[in-house]
Image 1 (cartoon, helix red, strand yellow):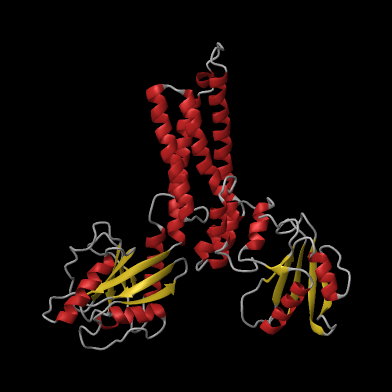
Image 2 (image 1 turned 180 degrees about the vertical axis):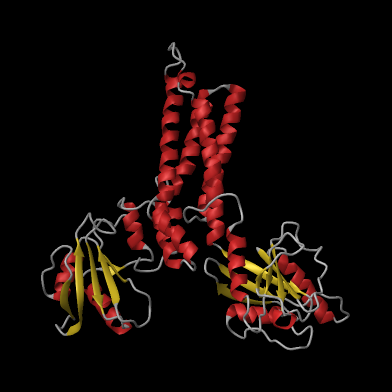
Length: 448
């Protein structure tokens, strides 16, 4: 960004719509001047001033708080002023228009966070964590994003980068002083330490993959025989009549998707046609779609009627399918709601979808099953970009160690390590192209 030293930007920093309080944010060298003209008063640093805000014609627009944060101790590292007023969109747009009249320009999406990154207040992982925290749909996603924002992920990457820097320097020293009696590579155990780096990258990649999985939106497919109560269960999970429920077997003929938020995860629940043999072409197509939906699903919810268990042939399910067996209609069978021991390895839950008995237990089981996948604990939020960068670093370092073992050429190893470190440093933004930065920050909301 070439306009950091000259441009002052402004934007509404609260969501669209009317609310009790709204914020207009200014950042840049003219922020204080614009705010003092807007309030027709002086503002002291880090003090909440109650002021009126005036239009060009000196008419009051609204009254509220004005807070000035001088650089460099502000979110962006520049002079920042936050105007807190009533949250009506007319008021906020009037305040923003006045700031623009006084010399600010409209901020681009994510430009406040981008300036914070470019001014060294946060790194790229923390910038992404801000967006992840704003967009978090579950407590799990919010917790992981908060950890990333605090620097948990960044510290691990910085430590790895520092080690690579040291090992690169030692490798290059062995090239620069080939006639010395000291074998630098052997004395400092460079290859062994690079192998440890490879293990560290592999472990970090596993952790990042687990983190990304736990913040993604999952998909779960309801399967079972006709009239087992799949649609009733979808309605119970959705707390709404989103699916037609009748006593006629085979009512559902197509897939029906509805999104829900449990305590920890966001899930798209897909209701499907009952699995059975049929001569009806439409029902056959519904069964085909039901089976197809399970091929890419994260979870299969197998629903059976507990009064007359009619277990469908599920040999067509993927071998690695994660499944919960649900015994529905316990209000008629008399079974107690909740988890129970059954003859299969997957969890079994007894419930009544129509009476909402045991549904909370099912939700707990869904969270437990989905969040327990994988061997590695999630410690911070992660994105596909992070997985790609770590995968590139692992592949490059692994290949470089093989080449060194074959040719014993420190020159080749030194060049390879530059590429490895570039991949690692791209995570925090020490090395990032303008295209990557543009793509990341353009996904932010305006005002952040």
